[in-house]
Image (cartoon, rainbow, N blue to C red; front, side, top):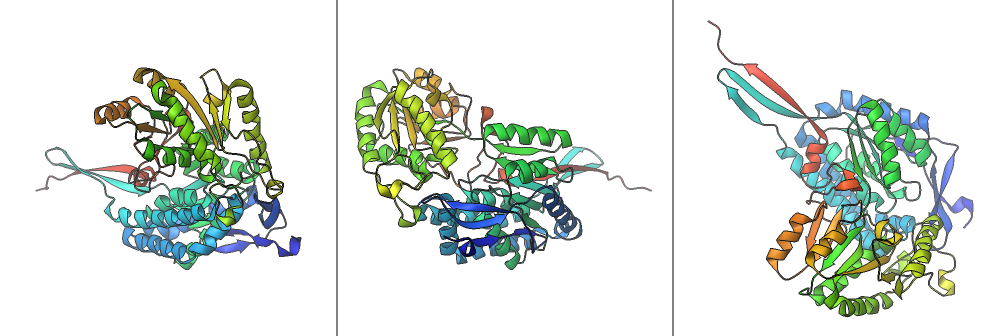
Length: 485
């Protein structure tokens, strides 16, 4: 591909495309070739975007009533659905994921705008009657300008997850997409404008994290921050937020366990366990990456999972395989580094390296892998690999299973597999994680289901009605009501 064929996408600030002389190449993970380039923005463009958001907030959006904001959000949902195929194609080029998964991502992104567009009309404060002659009530008000920094694994879906509730509640947004996968976020800006969102309410500014991302987190004009990504960068974002005394939502990944008890339903569990770690090649913060299985069913389950992994088809996302490539050479090499440790310390049941064949030579492919006999002493038990690697450990009692589940610093999600409802309730209460799935597992969760991490998986809540409260301040008004003579 020659440079003249590359798609070019500029930042969108105050409803306009901003000229630039600096660019970032966007790579197709299936063949390592650039297919587009986007603006490489820095502190100047971030400052311009924050000012545009402030102007739109102070003059238009904070005075727009909930019903009108609702209508705009629902029109954005309609716009996303109208471009479903084109957006999914872009998402697959950007991320490498199978096209069927990208289509689901577009549907979910549209649902976020639809859900929050509808739900915000029911958001209200509370009336309080503390004593005679005093009426008190609360108001829910937007923060103002919100900064959003999103990852490359589910770019449009996560953009919608964080931006939709912010817009619905009356905030204005500056969105910084990941440099590896910025294309659908930039198109989202255009769709929002076409849906009637006033200029400046949503600004999309691509760039590198250390340039555009750092400038956004440090900008004193930002009233609230949301970040999804690695724990290391989350600490940097939180530190910057602390300097400006602004609240922050952090979703920082996980090492989520499945706990499989002897009375599990194998027919239901096996395909969902496989999907939970191979969807988007395991590049999912709530991926079910640890399998904690009772010793009595270990051999049975391991055999079934190994067979299922061997049958998976790997290939370019556009061909809709079971699993596509990883996002980049850097991420592939990171996963292969963990696999080298795993081969040394554990037992490889299937996979363990790069798939063979000329068709895999140029892309960023890694085999779906099962590592058995993994213990808490092993690096792969404790650290987020962010690849298609399932780590298997055994336990002899339910208490030991919980202890293994809790032996990491993460707490994002967990799966429980048992036919005993009492045991399921007990485990759901004992496990310290933001989402517990019983006899099911959904790495994507659900738009309506509140989502947030325990321990070092993050702070704050996204998804569900809770997200609307996250993007509003609570103001109390107390009014003396005794009539004067």
